[in-house]
Length: 448
Image 1 (cartoon, helix red, strand yellow):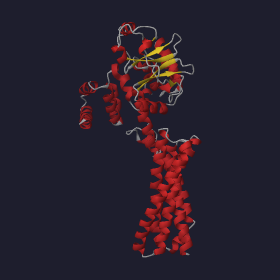
Image 2 (tube, rainbow, N blue to C red; image 1 turned 90 degrees about the vertical axis):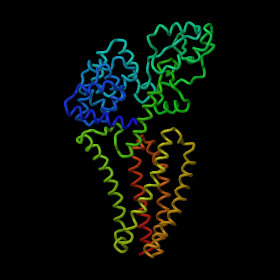
Image 3 (tube, rainbow, N blue to C red; image 1 turned 180 degrees about the horizontal axis):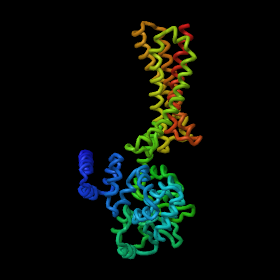
Image 4 (cartoon, rainbow, N blue to C red; image 1 turned 180 degrees about the vertical axis):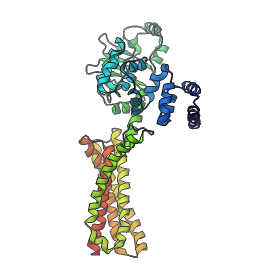
């Protein structure tokens, strides 16, 4: 139902723009929530996108901008000066402001900071010092802290002084006079405790604080394992710096998923579906060039057996089968291992077990499809020798594919190369070469 509604709305927007009834478009657009406005911008072709952005109410434009993908954010930010960006981000959470600023060229960030109020500038600068892919880069410094020696009644009177509390506040943070983190006070516990009870009596001291330099992927895993809504962030001295909330963790999970999916095709995880041809074509051309090089390497392996191919035409017909099966088997293993690494499940301690398991699976499937392929070829060409050759080559390549798919991502990670980006191309090259060499090599031995 939601997808149909979105499609109808986009069609209506397109019709309205074409008929120049921009007031109607403005009314439709600004009656949507900021995430829905962002969705309309991302699904609109480039010729409509900038028109729609100009129609967004300035009061919600900052919230809309933070919901957009990095590439589209940068597209709009490039058209603004520092003062405009500062005005746009006013009122946003610190972590969201930092996310937007990190899209800007380094030389423009000081200009934006200078245009901010002193308080906002200090808060943003404190987060900008941390890498964007760490807990420090994710955290929001807008937090409510209380001391352990005060009563529940004092805490409640303190909270009533706020016009509103930060979004997704499920806990108050208990700190010492030196801002050292001591524990959490759940809002549910606060509301159900006696007014004369002290915070120390009802606080949770078993909370695991997140170190400011923990990677964002590890933060996401921690939230997933412990079903957290928010978590405190501390430095080396256990001093409370801020908090991370589930909305930011969801963004990390989505970004990691996008990265894994698009990187396997050699694409950037900021790829815009409707980006211009002039931008899309060069990006894809680079990866196609890499693939061409690997294909030439595989073809070189085939050329070594040119004489054998000239003698038996059936080899040319059957050769792609072995390479294709190896490629699919290897991709299955590679995907499982990369996912395991992303979830923090693959370590040195269990790598040998995983390798043994994947080797066994590859060998079993290799033998199964060796029998199937051998039977098919025997019936097809009425040649038992050819059936033996393709069966043996199939078993060899599926086993090699399993070994390569397991060890390749671990090796790439050890030399700081993204397995999702480079793994597929290297794996395909290996399985092609092993498939061709084993099949044609066996044919050379048995058919000469």
